[in-house]
Image (tube, rainbow, N blue to C red; front, top):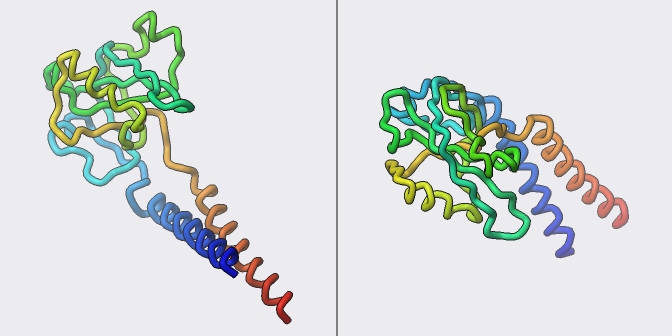
Length: 184
């Protein structure tokens, strides 16, 4: 009996999570929102979770951060600037675990210039928080809380959220039907 209740509660959690993510993706914060970097530097990004920022200025400076916990990937963390911002005051920070390893030694992971930045607003993994301290040691400063973007990431596709919701519902209904049929 207790196992059945636990399974139903887990199915309920998965169902609600899938439903919430579907609603957020189509009507809420997971929808792609576009900003200009000057606007981000001045006003921020509000409650947006998935952003595309045009006219973002990159300098070829980054911090390579080995994961402090086993199983976590290493990342590179780098400052992103508005056109008018001074070099030591980034408007936001970006990070990625998707990079070509030899670029770290060659110091070429981030190309200088202006381009569009797209990603999910997501804090640094706990295993990589010392990267912030290493950027501060390089002379960068920012206002707290700083916007941190996981570059080239997107929210989970809608069909996975729908599948999670549907699967949880089917497991819960199927288990109850099986139990009630066995009881009769």
